[in-house]
Length: 64
Image 1: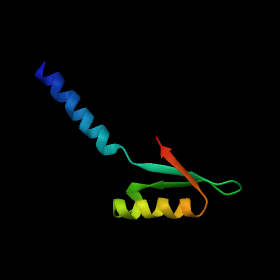
Image 2 (image 1 turned 60 degrees about the vertical axis):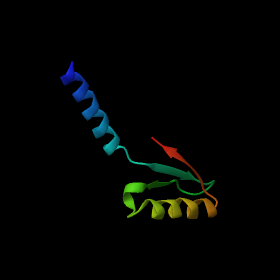
Image 3 (image 1 turned 90 degrees about the horizontal axis):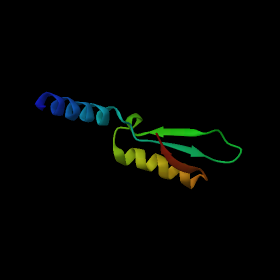
C-alpha cells in the first residue's frame, strides 16, 4: 500500500511540474495569440504580457 501511495504522490508532483500556465488571446479580425508563462523569465513578465494584450483589445482566457 505504501508503494502505491508513493507512486500516486510522485505522479501528482510530476504532472504539476509539467503543467504550464497559458492564455489564449483572441481579437476579431486578428490572429490568435498564445501566451505561456514558461516563455517569460518571471510570472510578473507573463502578467504584463497578458495585460498588454488585453489593453490592445484582445480577450484572454485560460488554455488547457
